[in-house]
Length: 238
Picture 1: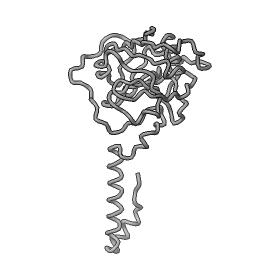
Picture 2: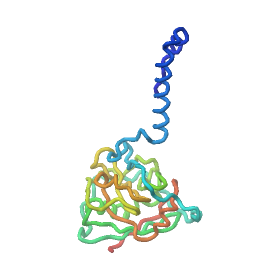
Picture 3: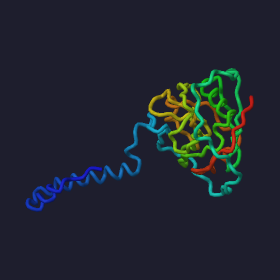
Picture 4: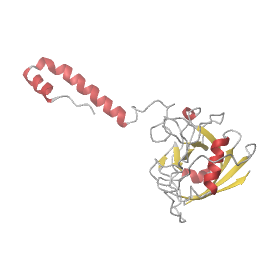
C-alpha cells in the first residue's frame, strides 16, 4: 500500500493551492487499491503464480451447483513426510491411455490420462497414485469457475514428492474437465499437485502441462469445496 507522507497534508492546509495535486494523488491510490482488491493487479495470465498455482483469468464458467450433497466417507490421514529421492523411471506403456478413478468425500470421478501426450507426467502420476501418495490429500485450493487443485499431502499448497517433472506442453486444450499439473514459475517444476478445470481456461494452454480429462463424474468435481479430501486414486489401463 502507498501512503502519502504527513508533511504533504500539513502543507496543503497552509497552502490551499496545493490541494488539487494532493487530491489527484489520493484518487490514483484509491483506484489502484480497488483494482488490486478486484484482481486487476494480477500477473500476466500466461505466467504462473509463485506457489505452484495456475493464475485465474476472467472467463464465463460454471460455479458450484446449489444441490450438492454433503461430504461423506472418511479419508485416511495423509503421509506428510513421504518423499522420493528422484523422479521414477518410465514404467508405463506410453502408447496407452490410463484411467484414474479418484475417490473423494464428495463422490467418485474418473479421469483418462494421456500418456502419449505427457509420458513423464502421466508416469509420475501413476507411480504416486499406486504408492498411495494422494490418499488423504485435501483439495487445498478451489476457485469456483476456475480450478480444483490437490496432490499436496501437507495441504498447504507448498508440498510435493521431492522431485520435479519437466513441462510437457501439448495440444490438449484447457477446457472444462481438463486435468493439468501445477508448477511454480519454473516451467519444469511440476511435482504432485494437479488440478481440474471447472470451465474453459485457454490462457493455461501452452503454459501448464495438460495430461488428461475427466470422463465421468464431472458433477462430483463441480461440488468439491476447499478442504474436501481424496480417499484414494485407483489406476487401470484404459
